[in-house]
Image 1: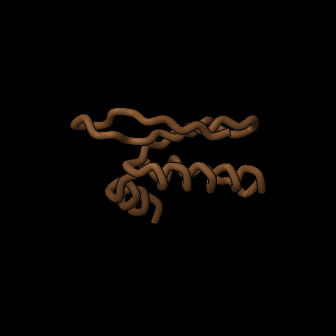
Image 2: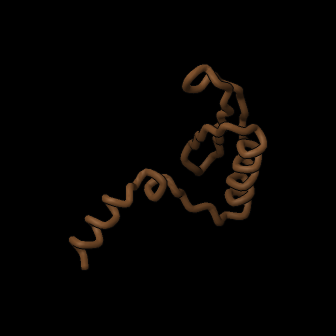
Image 3: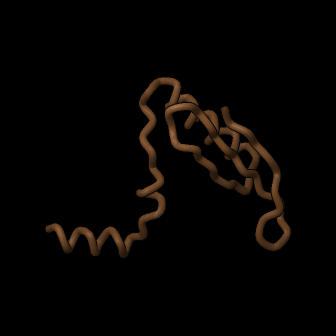
Length: 76
């Protein structure tokens, strides 16, 4: 189930953090500037988990373009 909380972000601005904990899936957390974006993301991820189509995007989100190009050059 997703939980939403307001936090103080960089520069003292208000940001929204979503945390999702569901049995059988990795715990996920993400921070957004807008509450609507946070709620939408939480609903999307939970819906994917409910339909068993969830694929973790954490590696892709953490990979920079430079790292991707270096990996491509090594393998191709």
